[in-house]
Length: 168
Image (tube, rainbow, N blue to C red):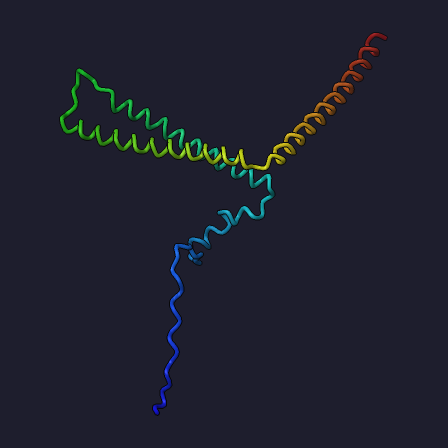
C-alpha cells in the first residue's frame, strides 16, 4: 500500500453570475462623500431637494441640447444661393446633420425616460407625504397672515396715536 492516500476532489469553483461585486478601488474611495453615500447624513427634505436639483439640471441640460441641436440643424440647412458650397462640403454637411440629429434623439430619449420616471414616482409615490407638505405650507401661510395682521394693527395704532397728537 502506498503512503499517499486518495485526495478528495477539489471543490467546484463558485458559480459565475452577472452580479456586480463591490470593489475597493481608488475611485470609489474618492467619491465616498460625494455620491449616494454622502446623502445618508442628510435629512429627508434636504435629500429630496438635492434630487430635485439634480433632475432640474438634467432637464435643463437635455432641453438646451435639443435647442442647440435644432439651431445647428437649421444653420446647416441654410444655403446661400449666391455662394454655392464646395462639392465636398455637402458630404460634410450630411455627416454633421446626421451627428446632430443623433445627439438630439439621445437628448429627447433622455427627457422621455425622465418624464416616465417622474410619472412613476407620482403614481407610486407616497400620497400622504404630499398631503402633509400641503398642510405644512397652509399652516405657514396662516401664521404669516396672522403675523402680518398683527403688524398692521400695530402700525395702525401708531398712526392713530400720531393723528391724535397732531390734532391736539
